[in-house]
Length: 88
Image 1 (cartoon, rainbow, N blue to C red):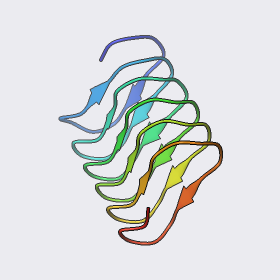
Image 2 (cartoon, rainbow, N blue to C red):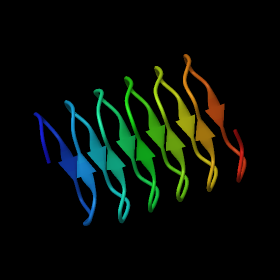
Image 3 (cartoon, rainbow, N blue to C red):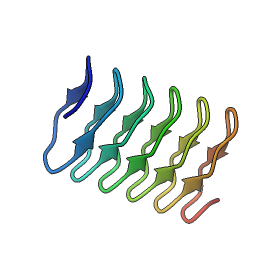
Image 4 (cartoon, rainbow, N blue to C red):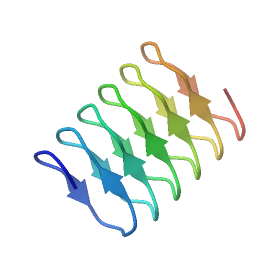
């Protein structure tokens, strides 16, 4: 855990940035602020107010992106949503 105001309720994750959260097993937020990785194995790489809630979902960057499907991914941009399993 590196940075300020983080929240984590699980184990084996990584947190960087500011005011980020992980709640899934092995979930990580690698930068940015106000983002959450809640799916098991999910990740947010950077950005602001992103949510990776699907299992193994990922968001690379952007603002207010959501990856809610399992294995879903958002590459970037504003308010993009990947809601189905394997969605891009």
